[in-house]
Length: 77
Image 1 (spheres, rainbow, N blue to C red):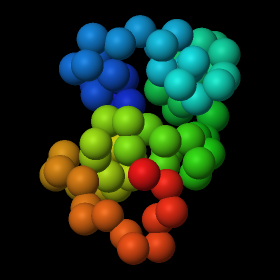
Image 2 (image 1 turned 60 degrees about the vertical axis):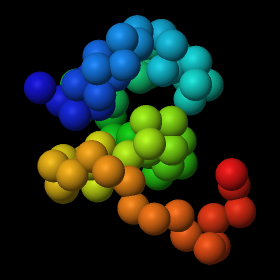
Image 3 (image 1 turned 90 degrees about the vertical axis):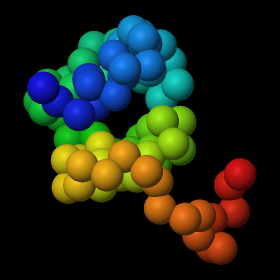
Image 4 (image 1 turned 135 degrees about the horizontal axis):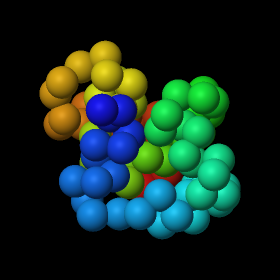
């Protein structure tokens, strides 16, 4: 199972709800989940913050769901 789909379903969210968060269509988001389209960096940042995890977790580079400490360079709250 794709990590994006897994974490979305863990939060009981529909693809449409996550697509709205990213300001894209449900179809566009679906393509991220199935791997048809690569997900843009800014969308990964948004999802990592939304799900309180790391981009590495979303990309299956780690199984550690806990996010990294916040960067002092990150100007968004």
